[in-house]
Amino acid sequence: MTKAIGIDYGTKRVGIAISDSTQIIASALCTVSTKEIFKFLINLVEKEKVDTIVVGVAKNLDGTDTDSTLLIYQFIEKIKVLFPKLGVHSIDERFTSKIAFQSIIDSGIKKKKRQNKSLIDEVSATIILQDYLSYK
Image 1 (cartoon, rainbow, N blue to C red):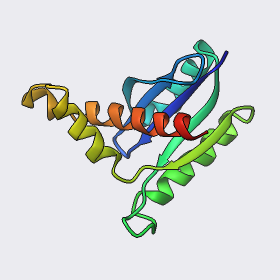
Image 2 (tube, rainbow, N blue to C red; image 1 turned 30 degrees about the vertical axis):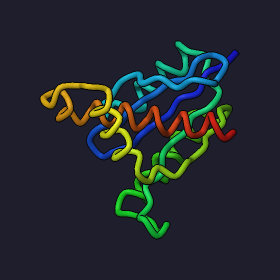
Image 3 (cartoon, rainbow, N blue to C red; image 1 turned 45 degrees about the horizontal axis):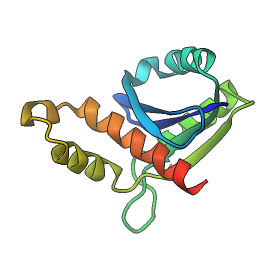
């Protein structure tokens, strides 16, 4: 069985989530510096049996592109070139950061740890991947 990777792309950090081998449950994996993301993904895809990459695409409330949308689409195109045999999908990520932050609060994590933006990126990637897995 193969796994799927969820990505919350940002200009500084990239949140990464991974599914179980049955592609039912998404789990937070880590946060990687944007500068290191392709090296990290090459290693991850080699280490894990990955057949799908899901990237969250930022949109405004009205569905129009944000300042980040073009960068995300460029990132997706690089992934498609780097991994031509993998399925690469995009999913609307509106509200994932807010949902992630609220779920972190609800989980009882102390305020000091909640200020760690890497944690929000990881949880956002998990939400992106779980949404994809739930609706595929």
